[in-house]
Length: 101
Image (cartoon, rainbow, N blue to C red; front, side, top):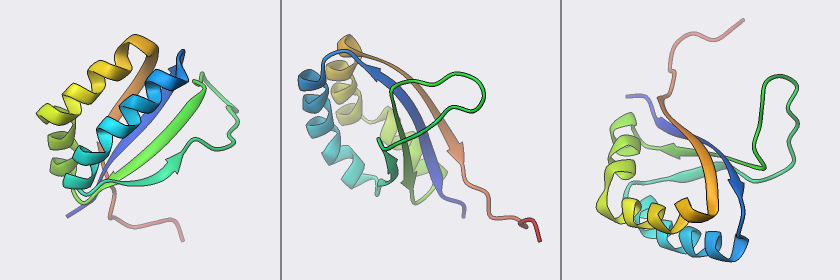
């Protein structure tokens, strides 16, 4: 079974309030087995558009990634984030197939 991932791009307008969201999302992330592969950090945008902050969050399955998003406790955390940020989030299934030689 392939892992699931959240690919997140966000612009933050109020970091203090955003940090309340970070504290609130810790419990659902733990419950659904989330692990940050990317969380902030230096980046460049060689093509297309970007936002100020990026994250890639790995879950043990695509179902866990979707279930976390729809969980009541994550939705409550989002209500803290939404007034102080703009985000793009994609939930995607991982790939376990052949790789380039």
